[in-house]
Length: 427
Image 1: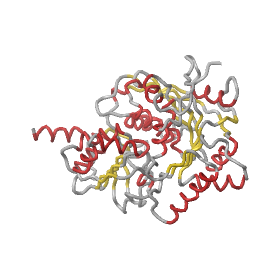
Image 2: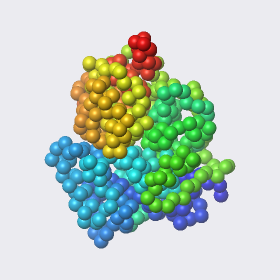
Image 3: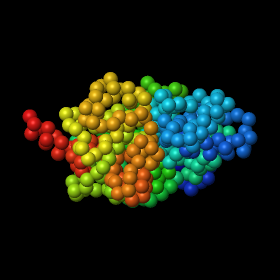
C-alpha cells in the first residue's frame, strides 16, 4: 500500500508493515516530554502505577518553562516535584533555569528529536517537531505517565491532508504568516485529528525556523500533527546536532490523502489574527487603526534567532512607542547568547524594549507580561483565546516578528513598510 510519511512513521513504531487511517495502534516512543504544568500530574500518575523505573532515562525530558523563574510558591513546588523525580530516576534531560529554554525550541536545538521519530509530549504544541520529519503530538499527562513507564503510546492513525504551497514568499513574509493564512482558510477545526502535511515548491524557501513555526501551529487548526518531509535544509540543521542515529522517511507518490489544499504563497501577505481565534486572520493592511499596549516577541512559535534578527532589523535606530511595552524573549539560552554576540541585545535595549530570560511567560498568561482589563497586545505567540494573556476583557492579536516590531514602534498594528519609510526619510 502506498503510504504518507505519517503512516510510515506510525507503522514502523507499531512494528507493522503498514497502517491505515482510523486504526488504533500501540506504538513505541522515541522521546517523551513534559513541562512544569503537565509533568507534575504525570509524575503523580506514574507513582500510582508503581513502575520500578522509567523506560529509558535518556529518552525523557522534563522542562520547567511555563512559570519560571518561579513566580510563586505553587510554581516553585511544581518544579520541585520535577526535580526530585528527575534525580530519583536519573532523568538525563531535566533542564533547570539557566539551562532551560522553551521546550519546543530547546529540544530540536539540542538534537533530541529527530527525523523519523515518534515523539509525544504533555503539551499541545508538541506538534512542532513535525518540521524535522517526525510524528509528534500532544497527549494528556496520564498518557505521558504510561509512556514514561512503558515506552509506548496508544494512538489512532490520523488521515492526512496535503497542503501544497506554490510560489515564493514575499519579502518579510514568514512561516507564521503562511500558517495564519492557512488556518484562516480552513478554520480552527479544518484539520480535526488529521495530519497536516506541508509540501510544495515554496518549502525550500523556508528556513527551519519558518517550518517549526508552521508545524507548531498545526494544532490551531485542530490537527493531530503537522509534518514536513526532510530535505537538505532539514539535514543541514539536524546532522550537527543529532544525539543518536535517525532514519528519515517520505510519503510515497500516489499516497491517499483525505484532501489536497493548494496555496500560492506569492499571493500571501503579512498576516494578523484578530481575537479570539487564530483563524481570524487578515492582511496587515486591513487591520485598521488599532492601538496596542504591549508587544511580545518570542515563544515556541517565534523565539528563534531568525525571529530576533527580523525584530532587530526593524527596531534598530528606533524607539518603542511611549505608550507600548515591548517584551523580547529569546526562546533558549543559546538564542539569547547569539543575540548578545550579534549585538541584537544592544539594539533591543537602545530601543527601550525589555529583554527577558527564556520562558513561556506571557504567552499563556503565566507571568512577565500579564494584560490588565481592556488592554491589547500584539504577540508572535500561537493563541489569542479570551483571557489567554491575562484579563478576560483584554485582547491578543497574533502576527510574525516583522509586524510585531513595526507595531512596537508605531504604537498601532503596522507593517514594516511604515518603519522603512521613516528610516528612508531620515536619510
